Length: 179
Image (cartoon, rainbow, N blue to C red):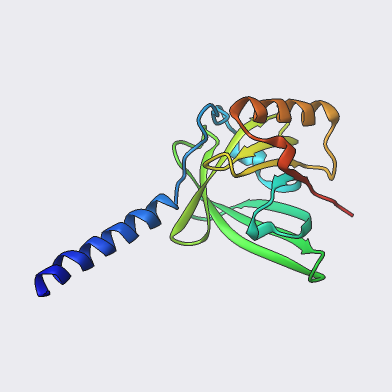
């Protein structure tokens, strides 16, 4: 029995560690590519969330914004806010983003609960950095962002077409309301 415990416990710990690490994926969906020649300085500031897939961290939120600012260590501060219309209260999450490759490539990883990191990939953006399509590490996470509370039809159509071509089911997007 003692010998069995010597094998079972380390094996269980190893399986748990692999499961935990695989949940911290900072990948990019197959078929998606991050924006190159990315200008992180132009990306800083406040963005309105126009659309997203529903997931527990943003459940029942409207008036969602993400504000990005530089940190002293070269990373990016992430300040997400949204109004929970069921609980009638504002929610806020502060996190940090780091570049996965170089600052010229819009592949980042973001964490709100260290040491857990998730992929944050800007896969399309207009030349003036007013509208962006952001993919997570898989087809479960997608955001359409805008510097304004609305997005022009041409960018909405462009982003939806790109997302569909990668394999996203855009019919499941939640269109965020802003006051």
